[in-house]
Length: 157
Image 1 (cartoon, rainbow, N blue to C red):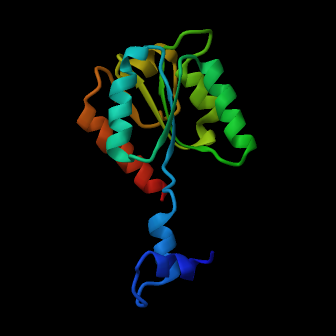
Image 2 (image 1 turned 180 degrees about the horizontal axis):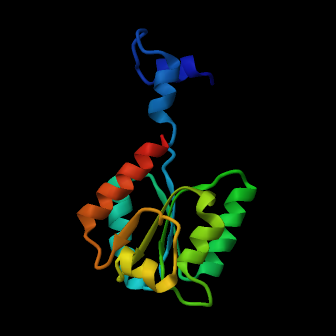
């Protein structure tokens, strides 16, 4: 069945093109988001935030930098980088969210770090001299997170 038949069978008038009908019936592709956070109690909050921004988004959750690195490499090998990576700084395991950002900040269109420590104090503690990616301080404000994620994903389009 071709697109014209789909349009005719859908009762769409002649003024509507087959490609417009296809756009309306094909599944929508959402953003791909990776959350790297060892506090799994935050998963419902992040699900809410991502769903508010993009109801069709695919959200993955891992608790360590090592697991995130594996998922990022898999996506890069497929030529499908994440649209957004959100990583806590202090994670379970040997490495941190900063290690992940340094290695794979380019493995996503956008990257957000989050921590209970403010960015200035973090930079003093770690001796970081390079600018940090967008940063969210805990406790998270859902509206601030929604705005930040929406702006970052919108800039990707």
